[in-house]
Length: 274
Image (cartoon, rainbow, N blue to C red; front, side):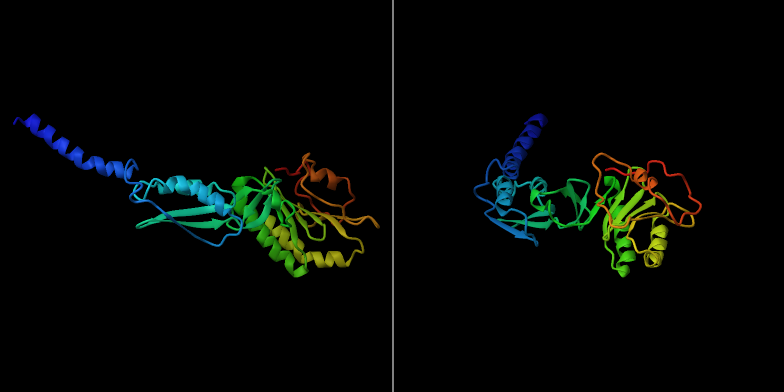
């Protein structure tokens, strides 16, 4: 037998051995012999639909134990509503195991999304549109920074009995927030934390000296604040995300100001939009 024939014979023998293995791994044969018949789901979740989960997983499980593509199955599960992340495994001989972490809403983000407790953005389900959550907003790349300042702001104003209802960062990096009593606070782009800390420390004294509610405070000054007090009988108006992109600065500049000293820059359209 020539060398060429011997090589051809060896290749043929290897192919005969390898082909069944390849066929099993690719699900061409054997799916009915080694089926995945059990689905085991782990994790604490309330809103993930069990029927949807089963329907998504079934086509992958039907490929059998050896041919199932766990990565594809995991991607499919993670596309389900309310699934923040998932991990898919298989257990011999017939178990597909899925571990799910469900989105837990922490705050609203912009107009139509929610921010989870793990810092991930996801579409706002219709059933949660009326859910009372703090309103955060800013560029998606700044989720961590916005969340950090929100948490720090809560700690600053909590001793005063005030909640932070809204905190926004515009595209230029300028901060604004709204307190639970309706006071609007324009923080600016720089030194947000020191400015808020100074304002929180002085706020009890400022409120004690005025009978009217504080409507707006502009912190973009070196040694003081620009304050706007509500007119008698009018109270504090509502402040929400302005779909028309109206500038807060135009609102502030139309009011008389007090406690102003050495503004660091003129007020020139620092309004925010998302």
